[in-house]
Structures are given as structure tokens and as C-alpha cells.
Amino acid sequence: TWFLQSGRNTLRVRAVNKFGVGGKPSRVVLNHADAPQPIRGE
Image (cartoon, rainbow, N blue to C red; front, side, top):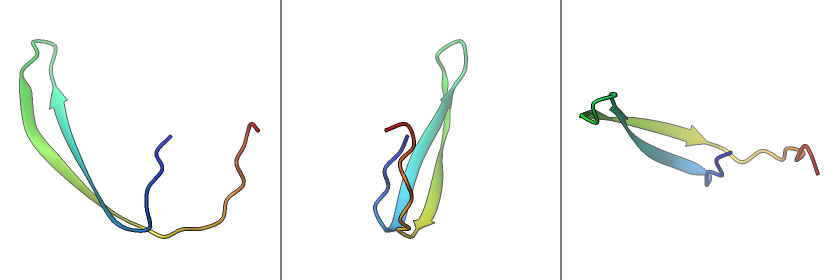
């Protein structure tokens, strides 16, 4: 579960193969707006 702040969030993700060699880092930009949602499982 990720808790993101409202606004623009940037995630940096880098894939690593089975030899432990990292690839190019990928950047994912998310525009997230707060919306009230019920929390399940509580």
C-alpha cells in the first residue's frame, strides 16, 4: 500500500535482472488528488 500526498508524485523505479545488473531508472509521475475512501480490513 502506498500513501501518496496530493499533487504531483514522482516515483523512481529501476529494474534489476537476475544477475543483479540494474537497468535504466524509470520515472513515473503521478498526479494524485485526495478522495475520501473507506479503509478496508479494519
